Amino acid sequence: MNFKAFLPILFWAVASAYENQARQAQDPIAAKGASINNIPFSTRAYWMRRANAALADLASPCPFAAFGTVIVNHTDTSGGEFGKLVCIGINENGKVGNPVLHGEIAAINNCSSILTDASGPYNLSASEALDAFADLSIYTNGESCPMCASAIRWAGFREYIYGTTIDTLIEQGWGQIRISSTEVFRQSFDLSTQSRLIGPILANETDPLFAWQFNPAAPCPVGCARGEMGVCEKA
Image (tube, rainbow, N blue to C red; front, side):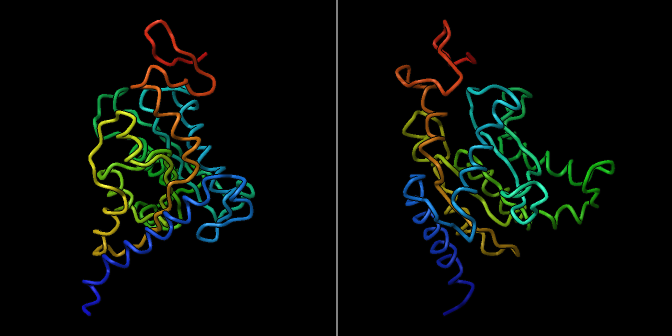
């Protein structure tokens, strides 16, 4: 068999295997002691919750487009037992008028600035910063659209971990391009880098962030309440 022709199947198989393992680990009790790609589920949960917390850090606990992202280095323990946070980002397209500034893109931009900041902790050259992404993991509380999933592959992240699936977003009323991250990864075999796809993780905690916007009966996220216009606002 032509090896290049076989690669799409290989990428799909790897991604599917991790997706299935991650689904089984959604329940924190059932996941006790479990690990995914040699990282304990407790660490995965910690960083996914940190991606959720990025919303309040940069905007509100209940922004309308509640897409939050963190980028971390699991092997750098100087930040603590769970690894080191490098940067965060949230969806800012409505804030700045840039339609492509989704949470993942915002986080990547922030990381690039932090990694190359001459007065910062890293002070990397542009080429060194590009290489650094191979050691980093990106957590996003909603499965990336094909634009962001492609950006993740171009960046060459070590891992990409998501919470709420695109299918769930569609079910909850969100407009989405119906191309899964698995499909983007399957079709990216020509790239020189490899990234692990893991998800959904902690969807029981990320799904509610996207449920209230188009369903007036859905509860607001923790720390928020519906205002006069029926929109969830910080309590």
